[in-house]
Amino acid sequence: MTKKIAAMGLFTLFAVAGYWHSWEMSQSGDFSSLSAKEPFVVAHRGDEQLFPENSAEAFLSGARAGADYVEMDVRRSSDGVFVIHHDDNTGRSVHCAPGDVAIAKADFSYLRSECLYRDLPAEKGQILTLAETLNLLRETKTGLVLDVKPVIKEHEMADLAEELLRLDPQGECAKGHDPGGTYNCFSNIIIYVNDLTAHDRLWRWSKGLENADVRYRVLGAMKFLKIVHNGSAALKDPAKYLDNDGIAFNMKPTSVEDIQALRKQYPEKILAVWTLGKKEEFDLARELKMDGIITSHLHDYLAK
Image (cartoon, rainbow, N blue to C red; front, side):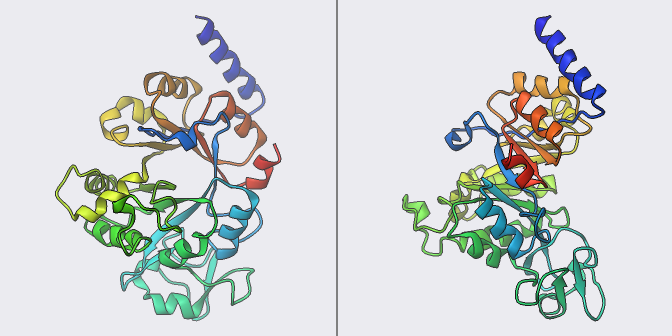
């Protein structure tokens, strides 16, 4: 009863303040790096407070500022190149001189030669490939969050796995050696594939639960989190959403009570919430003992 009253009091406080919000993310296994009292901090699309989202400058700035992870959106061009871009089309954050295009219908040579992030000089404003972004950040100690957009499907998971394995071309991680620059042999990478069928396929391969190239086993060190827009859905269907390493969810439509229920029923899972930008949101995430936050206002959060 005392816990229920406390929860209602917390809810009322934020309702009166004009705002309440929830988020969750799950993880299983021994992830000791995520056990600190403070939630791990993910710079949403890089440091978008200071630079255009998903640009090289945003990623490097997020790493320099002290984010634990830098998040990036993964899509694919018409000729099969994995590129970093959030929207289906160019035009909002990126402008293409001859005309804006759908990412999936443009070949990479067009995206590279004709498109630039707004408000950045040409030498710093190009759309990046996933491989370039991995290499850009490999000398930092910042983790990566790969938000694989839902247009990337199950039949493309082998290609994505091969792209990630290029971080360790000699297969040193499988031998128990970290050759450096591989984000601690993939353990410092969080991945969520928005297409859940594709997500499950890559996860099963990496865990050896389904026949696949044995090289994919090293990818099992990644933290596989499922996207769920309302945390309540995970409570209603845990077999679907809480069957692997965890979930990431939208805080706004999720009630405080549901977040508390998730924490109580699935204490081994990571609960991470997106996309926070206000002090009230940060404070609530701490009160609810979230494992991680995804924020578009990195400097506001780090300033406490």
